[in-house]
Image 1 (cartoon, rainbow, N blue to C red):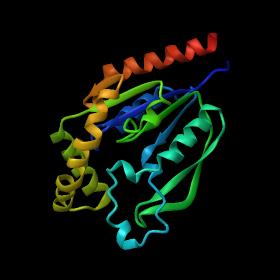
Image 2: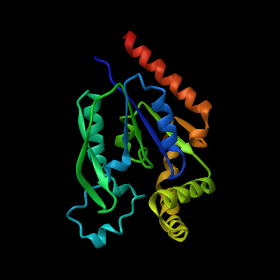
Image 3: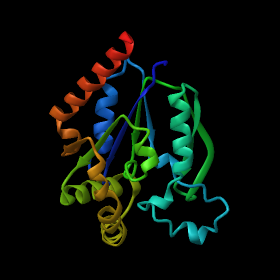
Image 4: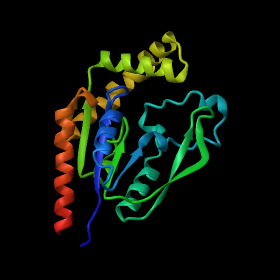
Length: 211
């Protein structure tokens, strides 16, 4: 049996710090073979959906994601085949015509709010992480990000959080914590947990070299 890539799932609520955790792990392996697949790139193509309906898209709901394509791409990368990762256009609320060529690597990090929600995705993962951060910190981080990077108003961020983000988190994201092998409190600030994960991944890679 040939060697197989390590697949790591990193989940957590919006503003939890899961992207910081993913980047911290990624940066430790700059000379190694590692890639990231962000679930945000795999929102469903809505080209055939009227714009009025696209504007009502709930991006925090499991049905917003094209997990079939994400799973297909992970399976291809596990077989060391390259894939064309889709690009989502948030201004048009549908998939862009552009794609990103992704070459297979020995470590695959799959990151997103709901990557542990789908059992098929979980079954492809060797390590499952959940970044667990208090709700007050998550809303503050989301507010700062959306205002600075996306030109949102405080009122619009709060309204979206109360009506969509919070209920979706409680209904779909928080329950996936039970599937995690490791729960990391406080995201990217938890250097001990990140160092432990890096050491674990290095050990697995070294074992693969020996086999």
